[in-house]
Amino acid sequence: MLIMTFFLVLLIGTLYYLSYPNFFWMSTSHLSVQKTNNTQKNMKEAYLSTDSSVFEEAHNPIYSFPKKLMIDSLGIDVEIVSVSVDEKGQLESPKNWNEAGWYQKSAKPSEPGNLLINAHYDDRSGRPAAFWKLKNINVGDKVSVLDSYDRVYDYSVTSVFYVDINDPDRLSIFDTGPEDKSLMTLITCGGVWSYSDGTYNKRLVVSAELISD
Image (cartoon, rainbow, N blue to C red; front, side, top):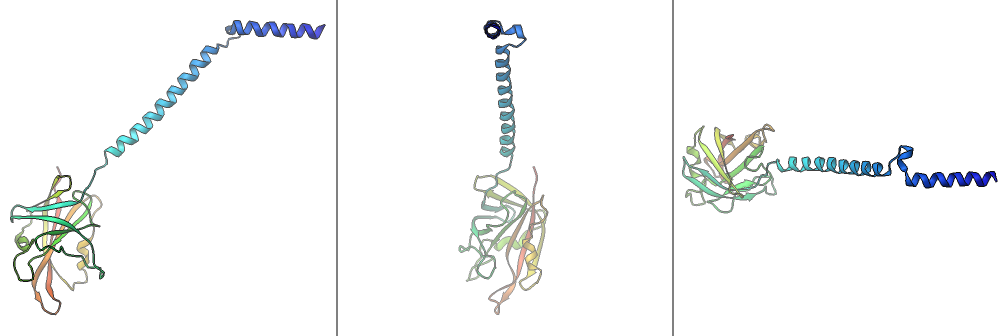
């Protein structure tokens, strides 16, 4: 009899709770709303976290390869092609006498590093080639480069000098320079013709630095 009374009281209490849940200071609707709010809060935080990282990536600059070099003071306006190094480790020259070559492992226009461009001084017959007039450039002259997105970047010449082809330090002109600097190096033949080497005995080197906006 006692057991039956206990189960009867338990049954009545359960039915009462289901009818009046607030009697026990627990609202099932409140728990549902709180759970929904927490879910929305977590989704919002996740969105904001993802959203900020997307915008950070969007602010990264986009660099592209150069396609034209212009030096207005000298009347130089030449197309640029990509070049590499040959099997001897020497920088290749463009096959076309009137084109310039961009070393494809060097920096791109406006990118921090050293943008390397070379071109012929003359052809096999001694006629002027792409960089024939480069010997007349001066410190402070402007060198412009057009990239594949048709963006123009201007560099200012900082130094002009010659390097002997047998100089042990000649490869220093390929150094990338400071990490935060956008540099350009133009290279062509110079000096006098060396019959023993089959090329000119020097290289004309023009160094320039990006003009900041």
